[in-house]
Image (cartoon, rainbow over all chains, first blue to last red; front, side, top):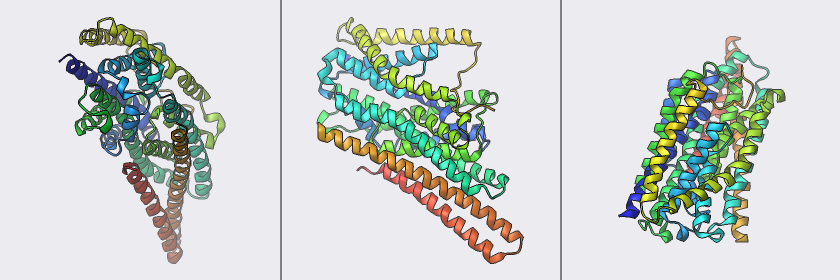
Length: 374
Length: 81
């Protein structure tokens, strides 16, 4: 009974994390299409929501990596998964509040690894898996998106230089409707699966699924897909209000290339089962498309933020995950700890959001564009 | 352990080259299609029907390859292995 209560809390918390992921990432997915006026905000957000939902059904490899690629499933309990999730959410909240760059995806895995270490020691963590399936792809993926977009923009400009700019712009705006959709689809294939992996890990820990027959149940896929799609849809309305003042200075060809490069890297990584920071990949693509036209157009501070996030997120989220496990354990192995801490988390969320609204005068945060603003 | 690492690193290398190649290929083909359609339209207006038809046909072929490449990529992601 106690384990079932914790499992329900884990599922609800994981889906809430998924919702916030969609909410936050809407800006990354649709900003390029909206800023080049390839598509209206309402339509862009609606399409992105639907394609995020569809993308979640395409592959389950990332979910399998998150569920069994980094930690010994035998050492994981539902309390450990809960503590990991709590660590990730706490780290995300802290970094959001103080304005430090972070990655939700890395925070999720860092939090889980930290709570597993706190519960069962270092031997329960697959260091090799962590290095090759998370750290290495995390470093490589934004660089690949940058290089692909940079090279593609140079070639595209050479091809279209002899024709009317107006026609080129119209053509690439039409192309952006498709490339933006592809980016939303790829986002769903990678980000929604992280939540699926975590929920499935909790199901394994509670004995609902055998560790030797690891699979992601359909209801988990549907729930995670719905949560990320609803998050994308809800987060989008914030963009409509703020896009008017924060326009990314890109032409349609750059937008098309940035979205195509980002989508290609995320889709290829989803096929390989690598959980990525989709925000970093999309930023890499936008920066590459900017650099291909003019190096000085790139806001290199954004690249610096990504590097900072690489170094900070994983170890710090692991530390917070470990602390979260310690705090949950203070209440014993029953469901009291998760219930009490969930109430504290909800109260903390209210305090943080009220504080942030007071500090910023109610204005929403908009991710910094990777190229200069118009 | 070492074998697993080697196979995973191999997968990362595949991700690198396949995403680089597909991004550049799709962007170049689409740019070719846009250019072909614009040039085809200009040729048609200057009454060079045969050249315009050839240009438009080449643009449509580039566009078709572009769409096929994207569809193939999405199908590949959905495959189990």
